[in-house]
Amino acid sequence: MKAHLTRRYLFSASHRLHSAEMSAEENLATYGKCNNPHGHGHNYALEVTVSGPVDATTGMVCNLVDLDQCVEREVLARYHLENLNTRKEFVVTVPTTENLCIEIFEILQRAFQYAHLERVRLEETMMNSFEYTGNHRAPR
Image 1: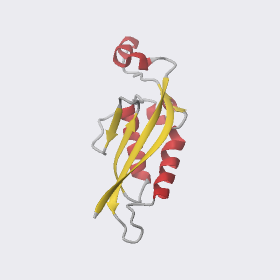
Image 2: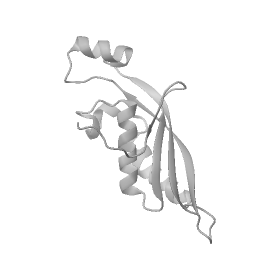
Image 3: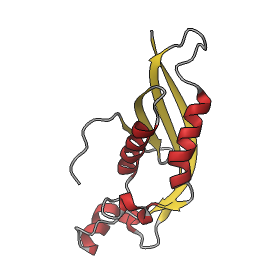
Image 4: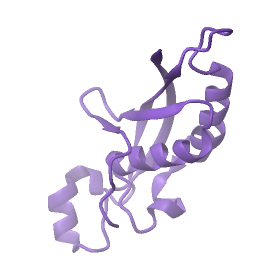
């Protein structure tokens, strides 16, 4: 019997949406106010969904302590209160929430071995959220 578990985490980070591949005018037209040279911040809500069989002994898909420790160590410690533009993974890649969502999925896929990672959903604002399920990434 396969079941899904979704856990929610909160963190805050800032970023500037700006591509070195585009002119200043193109960046402004593409990203608008999010291209502010001083950046801007978000209070992100991260949802991590894992799946697997329900263990007959524990009655769980995975131990929440293991999941929480992995997300804390691999994601929250890396991104909370950080300027995403200064992170090595975003030196070339624009730190859109879509790209951040993909990075988080890939980080957790490598790090979490206790259940199958189904998806990562990242809520940027009350109106915007992004989800990644491990489908193929476009070339950088």
